[in-house]
Length: 100
Image (cartoon, rainbow, N blue to C red; front, side):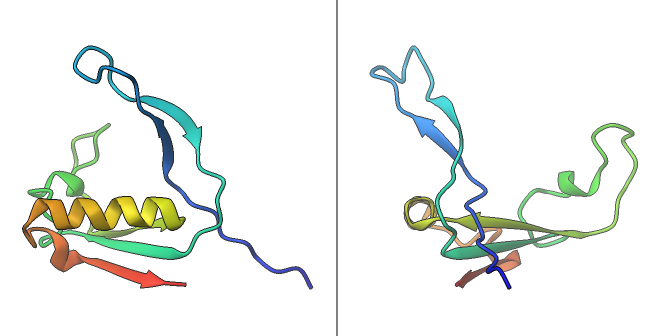
């Protein structure tokens, strides 16, 4: 029996020397082992003002849905820093972070 290894679902960002003129570049998918799972319940409380409940291609309303993101240690730290920097719990009621 083989063990299932969960990988980080985030993207690697390559910082540039002058972010004012050149934005951070996408370095592709992260291949580190996941250490946490973030579940976002899209619907009334997710903080997207209902935009997540509209199909972008057809414009029709869709049912609430759950999104899962997997974080390696580095991306988990970045997520936690972003939450602390935001200084608000807006939208956080619909997020559940579970350590693996």
